[in-house]
Image (tube, rainbow, N blue to C red; front, top):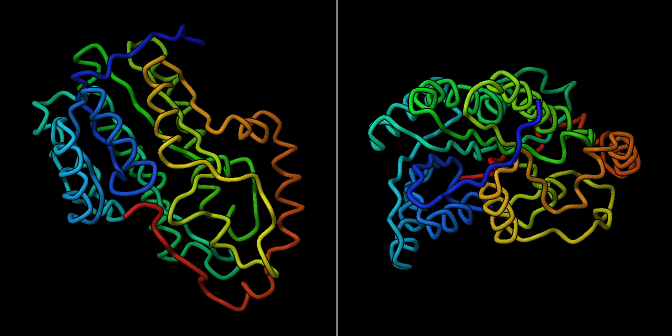
Length: 286
C-alpha cells in the first residue's frame, strides 16, 4: 500500500536518536535540534554525547538528554526505551535507529561466533526491540514515525563485508518494509534511510583488505550533507530516503549491485582473510 506523503513538523517533536555521537548521527542531532526537536541522544561514550550537548546548547537550541548505552548488550534496547519514555512523559514522536556496527571477516572463519552475534545485536535486533517498545505508545497517541537506517551495501554483496555487515543491513531493510505493511492501516509511518558512500571515520571500503590500493570510486558525500538530506526527506514525509541519489542504481537494479561486487571482489584479498579469524570488528558509531 502506497501512502501519500504528508509533511512532518519537527518543531517540538520528541525524537529518540541512537548512534548520535559521530558521523551522520551527530550531524543529524544538530540539524534536528535546529528544527526545534526535543532529543534523547544515545551512544556508548558519554564524553562525546556531552560534547554534542554543549554544541547544540551553545547554538541556542534545546540541549538534548543523553543516555550513554552500549546497544551490543542483549536487553539494553528495552531499558533504553523505558528511560527515553520516562524522559519524554511516555510519548515518543520519532524513533531513529541509526546506531550500527561493522564487521569484516570470512564466514568460513567467523561463522556465528560472538563478534558476528554482537553485530546483529546492534544492526538488527536493537532496532526491532526499540520499535517494539515505542510503537504501542505511538498507536495510543495516534501518530509516530519509525526510522531505520540501513545501507546501500544491502544490494552489493562484497566478499568479507556482505556476509555480516551487508546481510544485517539487508535484514533490517526487509524488516522495515514488512513493518511498513504491518502498520499500513494505522497512522504510524515507517521510513528507511539508505546512505551511500559517506565520508566518516570508518568507511566500509577502508576496512577491506585490498590487493594493493583500493579501487577508485565516486567521491563520498559528507555526513553533513547526508544529515541535511535526511531531515529534508523526513519533513516531506518520504518513506524512503536515499542519498546520494546515484546510490539508487544497485537498489533499483540488483544486477548492478552484483556486478559491482563481482568486479570489486576480485581486488579483495580474500585468501589472506582466510588466514585470520577476524580482520576488524569496529563500531560505525561510538
